[in-house]
Amino acid sequence: MRGMASTDTAQQHVNGYTANKESHLRRLARIEGQVRGISRQVDNDTYCIDVLTQVSAVTAALRSLSLQLLDEHVRHCVAEALSGDDPDEIEEKLNEVTATIQRLIK
Image 1 (cartoon, rainbow, N blue to C red):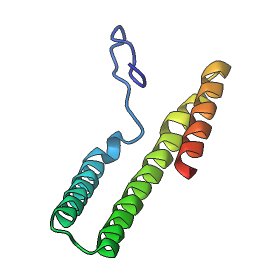
Image 2 (cartoon, one colour):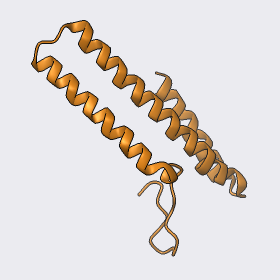
Image 3 (cartoon, helix red, strand yellow):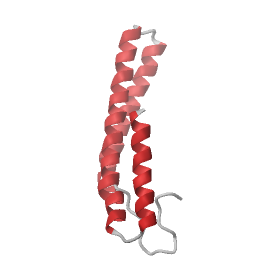
Image 4 (cartoon, rainbow, N blue to C red):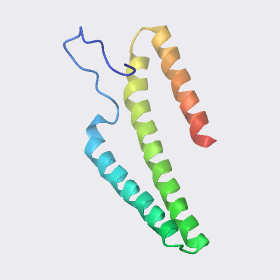
């Protein structure tokens, strides 16, 4: 499984976001509630602009969470790879973060 240490190791891999996991879960629950609210708006035939305003708010909330997760990944996972001596792992992490940034800015 990607991002997890093998089961042969005694220590389990810690993700960059682990320290803020509960905060992220609360944010995701709020976003989930916003999305349900949009569904209710559409079901209730709410004015288009009002629905689009809420879609924009959800998009901004997800973008903000994405940037936070990316920051944590760089500060934890990428920094950990850079402090090691495995050039293949360093290259993999740098390629991974570059590809992620490219997806986020599309």
